[in-house]
Image (cartoon, rainbow, N blue to C red; front, side, top):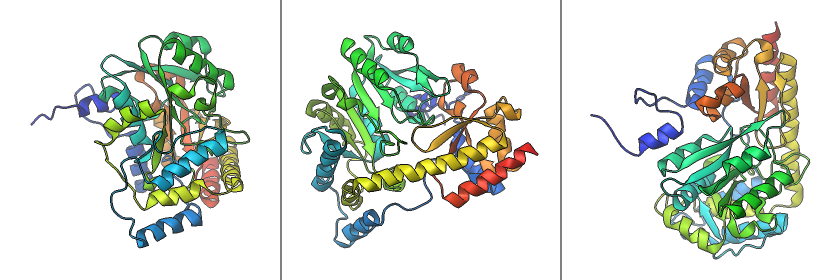
Length: 398
């Protein structure tokens, strides 16, 4: 039996559907399987291997004990919506109505899916940076929208402003900005963000920001697009507690947006997961209320891990980028004689006992050559794991 359906559009968008119509496994699944079969250290998957703050974990346990185990309200529990509103005011000076402008979601990925499906139609365009988080293309294709990409270039992975102007047109419905950026670790300059706001107004587009790494920025303050002049009324801001509080498995995300836009998104979101994570919602609310010092320490500790792994990669012979935030560092394998990162990643588990992800997994086939030798490594792991990985990588120079 041939199974036809919308899944084909999603798989094609995610570059998982072969010319023969067969569904290929993701590179993440392939590399994770290699890690298991070889016993290699898995620096491919972007999740931490340490628990988050005790206060947050205890709040979840207490919520379960208190019987908060049934469906929460459709918009999310008031305690979390209020905490999100307070968080936006506290960190960014943004005034958000918790009753009409906040929606709790099943992680940021569901928030993105609901937003793209709700706000685009057949023939609309979604503009984003490339490399891009793989779900962007899958969701856009599922909704019959076209994904238009603007490449990030140079050692600091920044976009060319003329290319941005050319990409954003009257066909553009959404401008999707991942800042801090996965997989590159880039943060975007204020003049770039201001240009995006200008172009959104010029072409009547909606800005959608994926800010899940907002508190994992090194030595600078994250600047949400919504906080810029003229942006608030046409910006959908998306974030989650998973990365900030090391609770990626809880899948508690959120959207803040003007009420009219939020209602349109809710019309789709309520038929995806409906609601989720009742006992985890008050726990994330506790996390959002932690002192400023906690958030500074989270970023400081992660930067130290980044520095450790980057040094190990450099010692092994890679040319290493300098991420400004997030979970990942980009390393160029070309100096080690690997012009093809796909092949390098398949050999690394055997050669060095370490797994990474080729950056080509985040770009379209026609642009693979521009990123052919680049590998993404996750540094959101325990210090001893990163030390072992660094030591093992030095085997590549022998």
